[in-house]
Amino acid sequence: GIYQQEMAAKEGLVAASSLCQIPFIWQLIGGTGKIGIITGHSDLLNSEILSENGCDDIPIVIQGMEKEKHFRHIVIEGNLDLDPGKMEEDTIHAVACLLEGYKDIKAIVLECSNLASYSHSISQTFNLPVFDIVSAIYFMEYGLNPPVYDL
Image (cartoon, rainbow, N blue to C red):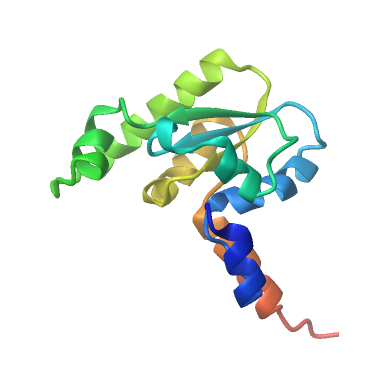
């Protein structure tokens, strides 16, 4: 996400990170409440990256996955014995921790592309809209190849 503006200026249409959706999401939720971000490591997501993605004046709260046991084992430490069930539990737990501290979160953005597989579970569990890198790709794909409507 740190290169969003540079890449988009050079290439024309780029989603370097799911974070680039945040200004749009902010409009979708009526410019009220907060947007919660689940990231791989909270120490690595800083104001420069958020600014690069147009998030300067948007109330955002961040929850890192670095303390979630299975996530740390697989993603941070690089082990290969992924258990999708444990990863889903870790992800749901991280979102629950975020929501525990902030009751006015109106949408969740999964900054870590490793977590996109769990967007549906998060949405169903917490009854919130969830956005990830895949939703950014679908949005771009629609802009590049809109459907033909039979009129």
